[in-house]
Length: 379
Image 1 (cartoon, helix red, strand yellow):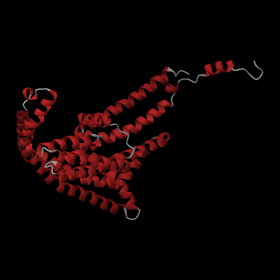
Image 2 (cartoon, rainbow, N blue to C red; image 1 turned 90 degrees about the vertical axis):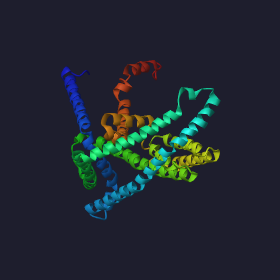
Image 3 (spheres, rainbow, N blue to C red; image 1 turned 135 degrees about the horizontal axis):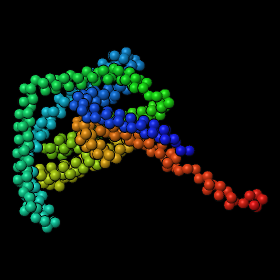
Image 4 (tube, rainbow, N blue to C red; image 1 turned 180 degrees about the vertical axis):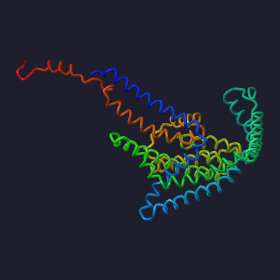
């Protein structure tokens, strides 16, 4: 049965309205991205802390449970900053001071070895010493420019007030999200049309499970592996072991990229600093230990198969989010991609059960087939 022209036009206009609404929301988000960043961070923190608040609420008043969870989250954040900032500062200073040593290793050992094995003349086509010196010079210039810019911004009362406002807003907004998260969810759920309540509730529950599996599981994996790699490379004796280990832990959200950072960057650091195979073997041991812990314990226990995001999707989501919405886009890229993955699975299921995919019921073929089958009387 073919729909009438009026129904087709009405359907097109309704879809056009929804498309324009989505476009308008995206445009407003693009304009307000700098302002929305503390709200997005606070919402993520509130979502992550709400289950613990709900659990404590069974024995304590809601406000008391919120205060306890908020104080715990704030204490962890402050302790992490106090521990990591000085450590990273020392590691970066060590990296800058070690650049001449890496330059000598590249020009005196690595490149001659590659030339001997491949027959290429790399030293004639590029000057590693000039490249490394240029990198170091630009690093120092960037540090000076950053200091100058920081001084300028600190003298700018408007920008300074904006920084202070964001720093004050983040804990305040986190507290309110923790306290009223269930209220926000109920109000949003009340806007769903009754005929779509069941499917929207199912998709929301599945999306929440995927987000919880990613944000909590993967962040714990990154933290544990970062500490393991940093301690392991430091125990091997690498001056930059802590920095390399933390970088590898941070990159663990892309499968194989974190371990590759350990074996490649850690191996280069061991060769440049010591030049023997004993320390290379130590880096390989740290790599193998991290892989075993991640494959047989961390990923099965903390993440499992609930996320379903391919590494290519992860990289594209982060780059696209940063290009479209800056830091806010990078922050929300993976959660949005995880929810989008749930919606795509649902759309795929609907498509495979639709008439467009299956086609019209082959009634004529069935009748023709039935005529070919002899009846009980042989007719």
